[in-house]
Image (tube, rainbow over all chains, first blue to last red; front, side, top):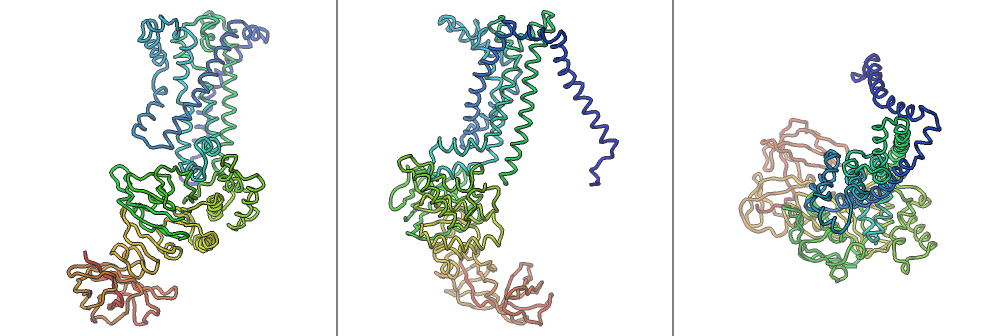
Length: 278
Length: 346
């Protein structure tokens, strides 16, 4: 097709080259560097770094935090999207803005909010100390900060999708005699399943990779409050490059798997949306 | 099942969708809610279904108050303009949905449901398509599946919101005939919403003409077409031409003619607005009493010749004659003589 919009081949290929060079330098090369660093002293060194007790503790903590934050955000994200798209109420726009808040606030500030609230000098600090509850510099604080940071992923993914699908399906189900739960489980959930899965993947990747907010509330206690990203930082600061890159390679591997799954889902999901034939 | 609305009021913010609407649908009746968009007809239908709730007023079904009855307990079948089929279910699963969500003790057995689905697929003339997905069907087929799904639960009342609105003209006409046949077979009291006057007049036992949240007239298609109660109804039905006129003791003075008023309840004198439908004109030579116009275009494609004429002030008048007079050429001056006129005071 030759039209005014079809650029000449020189422009086209130089643009592609610029884009590829940029991506190569900024994404592919660092990624390769991570794996190169991880295996610099052979598979044995990588293996030792990964099964070292502090590294294992960091992995366990990361899995625990993601294991709490992701399901929680699935439930809350679903509830928020359902409320926003299927009902009319007065403060809807405020709720939508609030959902975006974690994206617009710096993660460090998010972490500091929790220190201000639950830290020793914080608002609830004295009360928490009296009752012997530790939130800041302990696992609960890390979970809270992660939940906050990763909250928007599921809701952001679902709201546009559910808005586009409208309320007709739910109303049809109700008029056919379905209960609220039946409507959700048999009509709404199947309609949004691919979008939901996509949101969960992104949410999970961020929950495992979050550094800023978690760093503020964690206290960096080895074997106790270090997640994988924090553990990597400590190793790196101790000039233990191979170990740092070895643990980093696990996170990078997770990112690659997520990316692959995401592409797969996008492909499946577009297929289904096109098939719906609006 | 009879259904009635009593003084139903519904507002959306400052917009009054329904301003005190009262209405009765008789047992087994096929009722059309007809009006322009924004007239409140869909809102009234949704309130009957329990999908919206009135600010005041009552819906009764079979004489029973429905105020606190949610949609799922009303036994109402609702057909949506855009079908609202469940896209991840096959046609058969869609039709079976209403039966399969029943509590276990009321739920028919799997084989009974399958038999019911087959029966309904036959009724909507889609036998053998139970295994397809909605995306694999045409618009007309989807709407028939939607109707089968609504009928599967044996509703006491069938509500249809612009059921043919998303379909093209040819399919629409076929489906209209077919829907009438289905209604005659099932005898479920049915209410449908449309903005298409032809559809309402063709299909319904009685037509409810709505405008700006109020009911203008309720009557048989013949009544609302031949004896429109208000200027709005007359204007909305039958593509009538509109003229300013004078009313004088039951007569209409228009273009130097004094004509009998065919509108019901023609009383009073003074300024009025007169409506003449395209086929209610005769043609006379220029200078005769009547509406003086210039011919702009004449088309003779169907059974009638359609004359597009302009009055001296530029307003367009449309007339249709069984045979176009051959002396008429574009630009010719002529007189249109109304044979029937309906006039209302303003």
